[in-house]
Amino acid sequence: MLDAVVVGAGPNGLTAAVELARRGFSVAVFEAQGTVGGGARTEELTLPGFRHDPCSAAHPLGINSPAFRDLPLERYGLEWLHPALPMAHPFPDGSAAVLSRSVGETAASFGARDAGTYRRLVERFLPRWDTLARDFMSLPLTALPRDPVTLARFGLVGLPPSTWLMRRFRDEKARTLFAGLVAHVMAPLGGFATGAVGMVFALAAHARGWPVARGGSQAISDALAGHLRDLGGTVHTDYEVKRLDDLPPARAYVFDTSPTALARIAGLGSHYAGYRYGPGVFKIDYALDGPVPWTAQEPRRAGTVQIGADSAEIGTALNAASREGRAPDAPFLITVQPSVADPTRAPAGKHVFWAYGHVPHGWTGDLTDAIERQLERFAPGFRDRVLARATAGPPELAARNANYVGGDIASGAVSGLQLLLRPKLSLHPYATPHPAVFICSSATPPGPGVHGMSGHNAARAVWRRLRQT
Image (cartoon, rainbow, N blue to C red; front, side):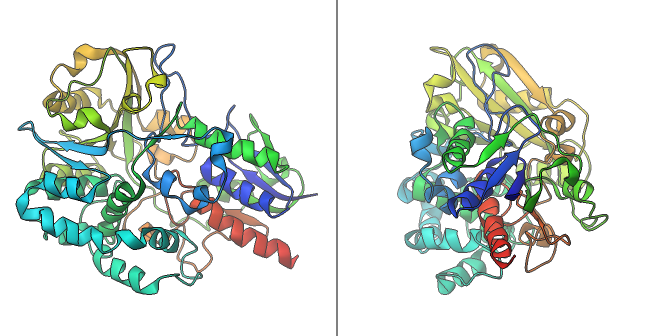
């Protein structure tokens, strides 16, 4: 009998498996797809030689993850590559604000009236970033914080809505860039704890950047799987699990799946009936015959580029998708251009590029024209560079990855109390009513992103259980 079986070979499932194997437990992973990866995969979606990331491409949370930093993933081929700028946010007048590794450069891009405000906001937390990150990404409520004073100070800033924090800025550049940071988790700007979301992304950039993985995000998943195999674990792909009886006998079962799928497979009935899924996304992967022709200079050096004319436009787009049930006319876009930092991702002189906008949950329309109109506002002539495109709306994303219910790439709404307390209000979010069944997906704290911390935290709950039996 195995000690643990993990269902789902995304970053969280693989991290949970590695953490258990490191402690001497026998572990096997079962994945429905033909390769490991979940939200961290790389495929030739458009043309031969163009390597695209179907979901996550830039990894501020990955390089800052306490779980990943404790593992020797570089021995298994993971190499972080940094663009000159982690992120840029262009404006219709041809200027841009930036999120740089340097606090000073970032502050200066906002203008003189907001530079000091921004520096005071982030510089008090940056020296304690590693401890702070470990505290709020570790087991919620049940783990004593290493630095409770800094965590409390961060809570005073981050727990109110981001709109409160944005009032500190006098000009639109700082407000718009910060609104874009919050929108990465598809949360309305006025929601609970959205200030913390923006702060986390900003501090992560200043601490270690927003890199891409050489060769594609698949390198993260492959490194975790390689480490697991060297620890004695096994990985089985093309293995769909429909019920617990499909799995070999084990002392514990750990699911890197949506709560909905877990309840169905493990026979938990309506245990997660109150879990809310959020808006979906419409994503386009591009093969380009050259770099994106941004009007502003700064985005040409950035790995990630946010697209939204001002904070009001971003807020309107988020509300349309999450509250009004319609696709926005001017979608807020998150775009990533990995080949700016990693030329191996495309043939010589060519580029890969992706963009997505938020749409209602389960939306079946086509946002291509709206996305490309937005891109043309800030990069005139963009369409002329397109060699091929691969589009994916909510149905296609859900078909590719069962955790993306209704196209929700966050695996659950990141709003209200569910931002922090997911998948249920509980001191033990990784446990289920079945004593041998656990959940470790992005539906558990600390939530979405390629960081492995949900798997790391769940593994701690599992090995406590295994030690007792």
